[in-house]
Figure (spheres, rainbow, N blue to C red):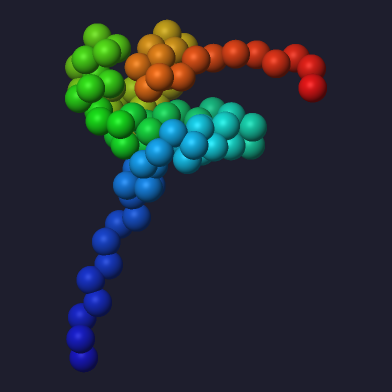
Length: 96
């Protein structure tokens, strides 16, 4: 019987354009928990290149991985820096 090789699914491999990234992040903001949002930001940072994001935020790669890992509770400043480094910005829309 042939062995089937199964690799772990990595969403970061599919975040290859700005529209996909924007939809992924907005979906997490609208429907996910805080932990989901942190994970999504971590996956986007990984897709964009953790080394580049670390340089732009002034954080070390290990600190960035730790801040964006499952179960972490990063400070708002860290999330804000990462989103800016990803090319995004935070806005609030109070009405439709």
